[in-house]
Length: 312
Image (cartoon, rainbow, N blue to C red; front, side):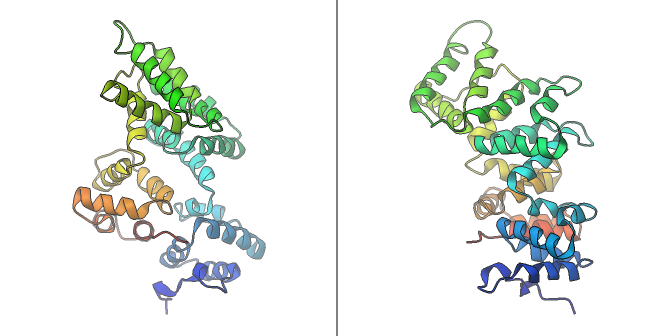
C-alpha cells in the first residue's frame, strides 16, 4: 500500500533524521509521486542535507540520479545560485535559441551579491565564464550590451545604497536622454547599469520618477526596457504572476519559466504570489496548473510547489 501523502512530516519533528528521509527516497524510487511529496515537503537547507546524507549512505549523488529521469527535482537539491547557474546555461543553449528574457530575469530579480555567486557557480560547473558566453553569442544580438552591463553590476554589491548617488544618476539619465535634443548617450546608461547594484538601480529609477514626475522612458539599448520592467515589478510579484499565467495558458515561448519561477520563489513569497495570482486572474494557481498540465509527476511537482507554505 502506498504511503499516505501526509506521512511526510520529517523536518518539523524533533527526532528528524536525514537517514530516514534518504531511506524513504531510496525505497520509493519508482514511485514518482511519493518522491515529489518527500522532497517538496522539505526546506532548501534540508534538501541539501539529504543530498549529502544520501551520498554518504548510498554512494550516489541525488542530483545526477534525478537528472537521468525526473529532471525537475535536482532544482530542489541545489543551492539557489547553483540552480540559477543551471537556468542561465539552459537559457543560453536552449532548443529554441537564446532565452534573453530568462537571462535578464536572473540578473535583475536576484541580489547583486547573489549574481556574483551565480557567476562563480557557472564557472565551477561549466568551466566557462557566463559573461564571456553572453558576449560570444552568435549571431550578435542587441540584448548583449545590457546583459554584459548587468553581469558586471555584482561588483557593487558591497556598496551601501545611496540616495545621493540615486539622485545624481537620475539627473544624468535625464540630461543625456529626454533633457537634451538628439541621440541618447548610450554609454552613460551602460555605465550606470554596470556600476550600480540592483538595489541602487531601483532607487535611481524611483528618484527619477520623484524628481521628474514620470518614469524613465528613454531607453537607447534593446533589453533596457525589459530590465526596467523587471526592476520595477520584482518586489510586487507582478512579473511572477504574469510569467506563470503565460506559461500555463500557452501565451509565452518561455516554457521553462514555470519551473524556474516556482522553484525560485517557493520558500520566499509563494503565499503572496498565490494571493496576487487569484486576485489578478480570478482563479487559484493550483487549479490552473491542474487544468493545463498533463497528469503526471511534473504536475504533482508544480501543484506541491504552488501549495507550499513557508517553513520555519
